[in-house]
Length: 184
Length: 199
Image (cartoon, rainbow over all chains, first blue to last red; front, side, top):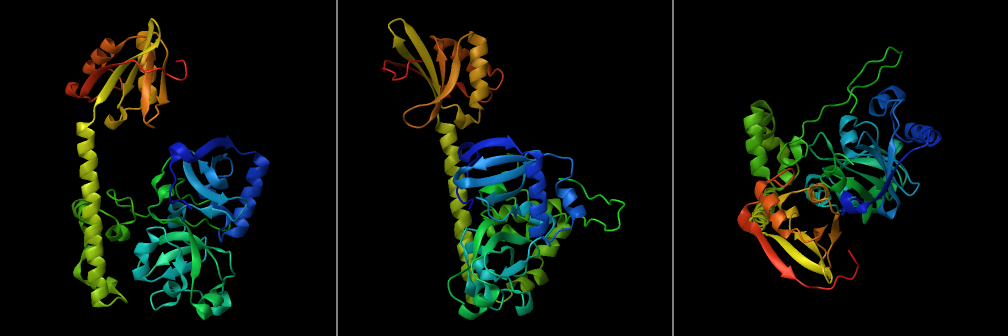
């Protein structure tokens, strides 16, 4: 999503967010991510108002003191930025890719099923299977930190069975243009 | 970001993991090998934090990382990484050369019969904030100055009135934001185009 994103041209506007909207954002985040309220308070303290940065293609980035915290596309699921994910890696379910796929991921490719089902990849076990269209954190074989974020296109069980085509659509990856932006 | 605080409630907040990011390529340290400046990253890390360097690049660490890839695949990856690095370096060199060769062009353009505007073109190659520079010009000359995009798509500063000589002086002095422009790079040109929008 952030392959070609330049803050100078792609931002249509910045607005502050109404507190009712902020409250609903906070509750949807607490329900979507596996995070407890106290930890989330470290990311976004209760009293602080966040700003909404509207970008092209209906992407909204929410930021606090200039630093992007999370974003969403249309009204879809809310994704944390990779920097936040690095600090709190437990907030999204994990999937793993094997080493050979890392460089393609870092160039912005989506993740194909074989990268997830092969020896170096990791998919959650059947009883913890994820349905399609879930936000996940993408980890790489042998690395501690996440490489990127994406949404599952198929459920994890289907990925193991079919093993062809796109498994996880990459939304935000290490070194893309959102990663390069420190302050908006 | 907020530092780790322990609130006095029953459930304690989990503190964030402090990730060390490489200053050269902004990736977390373990991903430097996928960036385009791996050599510089290694050098920097060796100078800054020798123990972390050992942790990532010592012999056993390298062996463990080879992981599930066969030998040919590994050497292929290394070759491609080296190519990518060379390309990135060539790009950086070309950009630097362009910067040195680029000029600041000052044009005097006729607006109506006896009025002129001065256009200053090429300041961004020297890393100058155009808006601030425009404001400075406006203050100095007590006229209007603005930043516009010319038909080629490049940005330039338009100052009302014929102030080309004084602009050269200002650049020579290097006052305010106008730092770091060598005088030889400044070129004055006389032009008589008809501007579509009345300045």
